Image 1 (cartoon, chains in turn cyan, orange):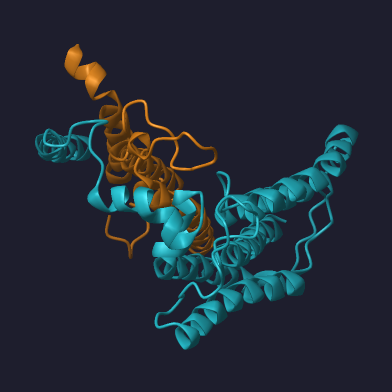
Image 2 (cartoon, one colour):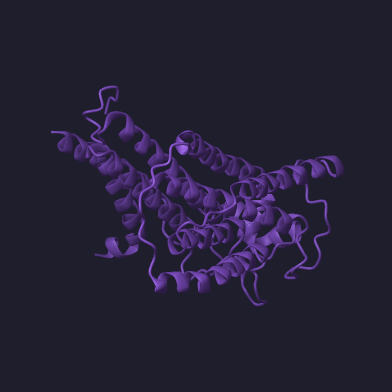
Length: 228
Length: 119
């Protein structure tokens, strides 16, 4: 009965969506705002990667809000699991095999390096703070899998996370003082496609990278600590 | 057949969305419901990216000279999905941690057996 009602409901929704999607042809049109970003993006923000200029240039304030969602989710997870950290149940965990251990030691620096590269070149090549931060967090996940017993320094990760968020907000306030808007791009835009270009965009992306990396690593740390 | 090949991306994205919705509506196990939400997420990302696609388009990055601006795909949906994926991971972790807490409290993950829940 429940399945029947579910399928019926989904069929009604599917009909409505199909009728409205008929008006949107696939692969032909672009939004007006998207056209503007592509044609004017380089001269207005200085970033060669248009997606980056949208994420931390035109919609930087929106990104600040999304980072806040990430922060809230991490805080919620920490609050749920942090209470029970006192009573530890010591289960004997089998140590990882030699292959996993050696592979971890080999891959960990490479992953950190790749993540850093992707964060720093966010305004030039595909990538940026979110992607690079996820790669750095995956390096820490590998560390938890490969070297049992090792943990990230919790206080240091919190400091790095707070530093990332503070840099973002501080840059916004400096823009408010020097220019007229919050997150105004007050540094020189430089010439396009150079590493030091696009004003505050690379700095904001580095801050986002630090924040995302340390937050995702913190989530992994909380979940693994819980499973022990 | 023509209809299918022209709209295959929309059909794929909405198949994922409807599979996710069906799991959320019908399944009893809380973990399965969370997996359903995750599948729903993936479908939405695909749909947003599909909306911005242009036939034979290139990535919206002026990495070398000679790239035509008219041939680039829409950057706005990509920027939205980029942040949404990372947030999706964090929210998924929060949902799983809530499920763990529920299991510790009630001893079951069956949503019909948890009395305070109306599902």
